[in-house]
Length: 185
Image 1 (cartoon, rainbow, N blue to C red):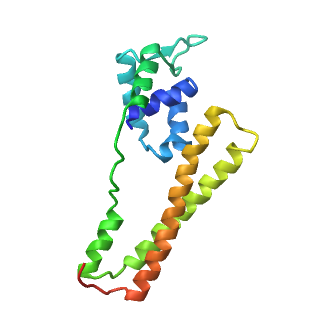
Image 2 (cartoon, rainbow, N blue to C red; image 1 turned 180 degrees about the horizontal axis):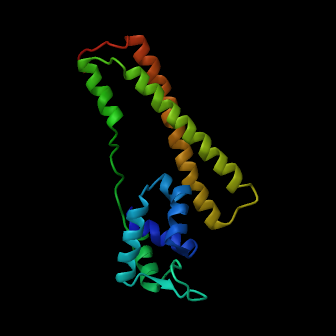
Image 3 (cartoon, rainbow, N blue to C red; image 1 turned 90 degrees about the vertical axis):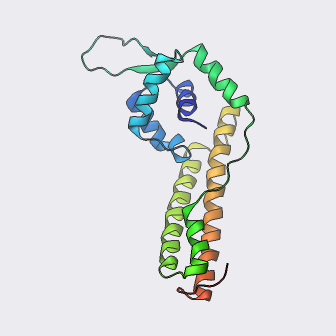
């Protein structure tokens, strides 16, 4: 996935100003495709130059008014073509997993504390996702778009559940091996 496609998706859901878009990223798309506000604004400019989006004319001219953007047909076509592409899954690339592998050969002092910290981060994220699910996806919301958005959220929930289960097991494994134990891979 790329940032331009994430922005096109968000703008097709609802035309927005750059500020509104960055806030929406902070509350939704940013959970699985994080971007800084600066990156979003820079990409809005590129999409506008490429003729994929345009700034809507404000209702009244005002100094310092913010631009609201909408997706043009070329942007919709670009997004539809990207959605249809075949793409292999990306391999997991996580520094914590590599550090655990290294700990097997050099020892693991402090690794238990780091695993517990990660576990807490994932527990908080899981709780936040579950709150979003309860608030935004009541049983009566069964439209196609809602189901697809809910599936994305469920993917995040399932990943957080995986990490909390795996980290709990890893913490127990480190404790059984002794925090400073090292050995052959």
